[in-house]
Amino acid sequence: MPNSKKSFFTKFARTTALYTGKPITFISAVGVIILWAVSGPFFGFSDTWQLVINTGTTIVTFLMVFLIQNTQNRDTEALQLKLDEIVRSIKGAKNQVLDLEELDEDELDKIREEYLKLAEKARDEQEKKKK
Image (tube, rainbow, N blue to C red):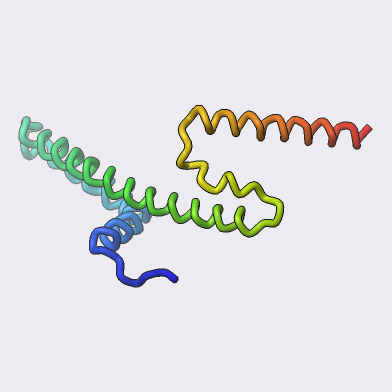
């Protein structure tokens, strides 16, 4: 069922997220910071020297936010679909919970209250069995 034709951005976002999460990438980033800090005396700790790191980190952070969000959105949607399939396939499950992510906060709060009551009732029954 998975479609092997992925968009360029999807491939790019997934690959970037994969590599930026590796220890070597973190170590490389720390190395860049150390190199920048060590170069400070050679540039007289000038405004330009400071601007280089500020601009670089701002650009990287700005772009990474969108890549991470894209990856997170896909992962969340895939997880939601898997959970929906599990709920759908279990006999006796409440199929009306399949699209909870589409409800607004008030509707979710009402359903959550129902489940909290069910959990409390189950705990009470469990306590009665222990006695």
